[in-house]
Image: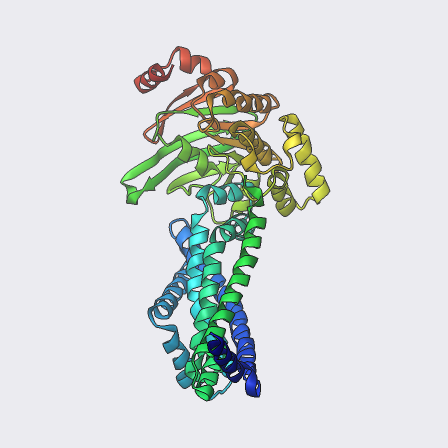
Length: 242
Length: 247
């Protein structure tokens, strides 16, 4: 037992302390957080635009007067559906590599490329989550808003979206947790994120135990912290219910 | 057109499924200022569709709706402005569950009539006072009973200071003991001279308050007249049959 403890201490020292190896993890963590944060923002932005177009089309297909506006909306809707099909139909690693090796082959800003890839990927999922939220709100709410004289956009912003947001919060949180962990494939384009940092240490020390467990523990703590934040928000939003 | 006519429909039709289902099939109706009109009829007769088309929640397939002589279902009409003049009360209340009662009532006036918060709240409180719910101003809709919700829905519509009130089966989703409190509010409103169009199954209310009763069946107006005439001496066999079933 004594012996085992001594050997573990030595391995811990070798993997995380010696030559400041913990810095691979710290630097990697910063990259992971940066990529996740901006990808989430981009994903929400894309998701909002795509969900608005798709939901508006769904809701007004029957009632909108034919004309140029309706034609534009139909085209945008088609474009959104094409985007959803392609993004959801291919693995995120492949999308990341296509971005890095093909689309942005001339650039070497790996963080930016990762943000764009993961953001565009996440946007597709966020869009469908948001659309499901909008469609989950009873048509009577829209009718009540419109019957007061509010226009379509005002009804959406003041009446439908606040209620939809509350309903989709768990699904949205889920998507962001997935995204945080999905960025661990950034190593495929040699971006040194948290996972890659652990991998580099393993390559130096030929010891997989501490680097991998440390990486796993950091992801776990991040996700637990984030889940806690979301639960606070949920409790706040649930105020209007009994 | 007579001066006191506020709403007129001409050959109003609403078709679904490419014409296979005719919810409205040529409805010609007029509603005078200050008149209380009750629309009755069997389920599926088109009475709700008729009511909802008056503020364009249903867009007519053909025909015309005139409001103060201006055609409503025309491209030139600002439909949002038109709806501001028509308050609507729904069967299922449709209060906004994420807002307090007070906010439910002030959002319209603040966003549309450009009233200040204080102004809108003063008006809302005055109306809540009248329906005996001033103490619930800061409650959320989920904390109210059905009857209370419907009373709030009525005063929410009144906050926009409408010229006409539309009621779409306002008591059909209520427990029986709560029907009275909602009908009382509607009666008061009628006495104050509000123009009202009500779709309802409350025949007692119709007898007592209505100036005119419209009986609809199969998307058409079958018969109309004063409550006395309609209840005592209906002419059309369809009307007779319907009234026999429900009275």
